[in-house]
Image: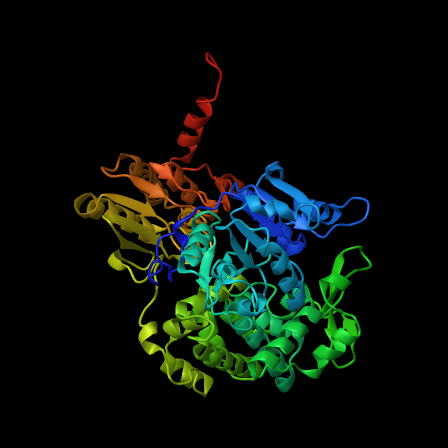
Length: 607
């Protein structure tokens, strides 16, 4: 786990007591995509797991066995290493349900049907130990409805634990207590999900859709309606709602295809019925579902893959007027070209909001609707604006949540740009005063420049945080690291190097190296390389311990900084290497030397 893995809204801050129990063994009931994925992630964390599903004739464990085999073959991989599946035992819910007496936590991941869940809990209650915790992975069925009629003891040990798919990779887990859930149970599961499973925990309200799906589903319905009203097309909307504004490449319509159009329609209809809110969908969506074009699982939805004359894959887009699939090629919108070059999603969104014409109109309308709705949901789906942001960022891969947007651009400016209020009263402005850095709440900034900051984590520990583009290690980061050595030696007892970016670091600023090379300023290049090397290798000789917390892409200089620290606390999702050789450079920040030293440690004596 890294410093990026901790929710700013911690259970400790909420006054919940420290975890009173440990979880050593888990049972997962339901071996579909989610259940098998949850079991795999428990195995990744070293937790022995029992995976059960209903029996089949012949091989009574066929469904559980099949679920395990699917997750073994899944791409991206559900297991972090070969062989981890050995810690998962399989069985069925008739012959093996009694084995849940031996577990500390039972996770339900069966079909989204209230009667089926209630029936299961009736059987489970008779077999549980007196201390076992029980939870549901339901994505929308309120938890209190599931345990209606169960004993007080069962209800006190029951809550929701909503993982997102795929469980290994999506950071979010929504923990959903009911009015009866014991505070110690909430603390135990929150602590385990955070510290053992490496999840970002959002404590969500027990309301329809919980936090992430409630807000995201509303946002998608408004995007689709705006598309119709403004005469746009799915591929244009996906261009406007994808990486351009800091969201995944799947954007809106590709996300719907991946989720299943029938599932999405079922979810929004359910939300409309249970909340009374406007989750209405344009008529075209129902027409697509009625034709059985449900997305990836049926081979076609809003998009369809086919082979061109040259044998290459071609992506066809559904024409919503003719209901025919068309090859529209790559979307090219000249007005967006300069916006796409802006370095941050905040800058790109602001530029889109200022853009005249239909693309700006679309962005202004959907942004205002999202921010207004998100503001109303504070206190309804989660208690804190940061939890709403985290739910969308960790569950849907957004780089900016709605309240991040409000913080970065400002309520007044957003209202001016959108031409309408973006937050409906009562506004939670006191909770939006400033950015949340790293972990639990606002941290004191000791030193800062445009590329890096030195933060006070408390307990005498400082943190060097990068916030340069791609967290590259340029002059600003090196200057702050040198200042950190002086400040930490004088005022602190140790230094952590970590950040909350998409990746720990993509390495040194090679643009500067290229510019100096092209202009033949070899003396300056040599001086820069020497300074970089001295700064990075100096970490090991600092008069205080240095701990680096790398995660995701940690390349080149980011790798060198990690291996020259006194200790490294690596994320499970770490992709580290000295990749400079790919562009014809020899690693010069101490990496070459360190790798040679480490290699020789494993050579036979005398070699």
